Image (cartoon, rainbow, N blue to C red):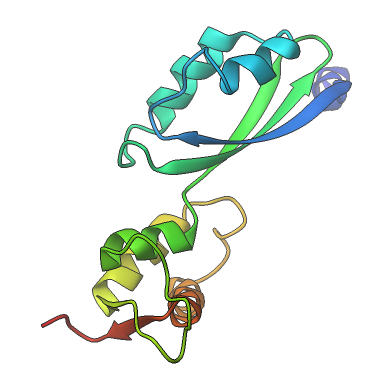
Length: 156
C-alpha cells in the first residue's frame, strides 16, 4: 500500500511550462495554441475540447490565462484563471480603456454589486480561494480607482 502511494507521488520530468491567454470557449488547434502545443508534441484536440468545456460558463471571447505544464511523456496538466480584474471592470463600466489620468479624469462608474460579482468570480481562482470576498472586493475597488473608475453604492 505504501509503495503504491509512493509511486503516485513520483514526479514526472517536466519538458516545458507555457503560459497562454486564450479566449474562453475558443481554443482551436490553429495558431497560437496549435503552434505552441504542436511544437511540444502534445494532444491538441484533447486540450482544445477540455479547455472549451471548462470555460463554457464565461462570456465568449473573455481572455483566460492558462498555465500549462508539459511533461516528457507527452502528457500535460494545466490551470485556468479567470480574466483579469481590469477586464471585468471595463466590461462592467462599459468602457474600452481606462482613464489616461486616474484621480483627475473619471472614465466611468461601477456599482458595489458589480464589485461583489467580480469578487465572487475571482474567489474561484487558484491562489484566491483562501481570501475572503471582502478582501478581494477591496482589491478590486483599488484597481478601479487606479483605472479612473468610480465605485458607487448604486448606479443612477
